Image (cartoon, rainbow, N blue to C red; front, top):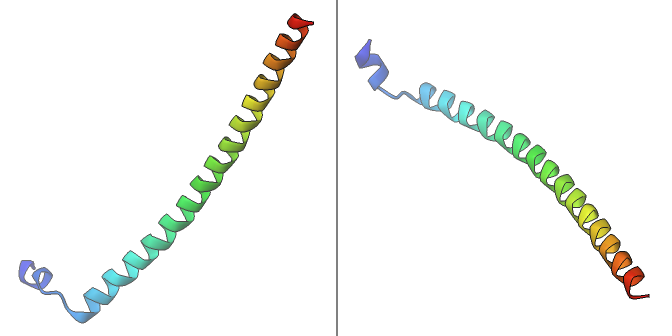
Length: 65
């Protein structure tokens, strides 16, 4: 059994290539989803920071007047 597994035939190499291609496609899809999540998080952080900055400016303007 060890001898047969040590020999890499064309069929086994093709099978390995297919598995790696399938894994690559799955990883690409998952990274695309992760990138979308980071984009949404970035937008949420920018929105929250803009709101906080506007609130600070409004409070400072009210204190000066």
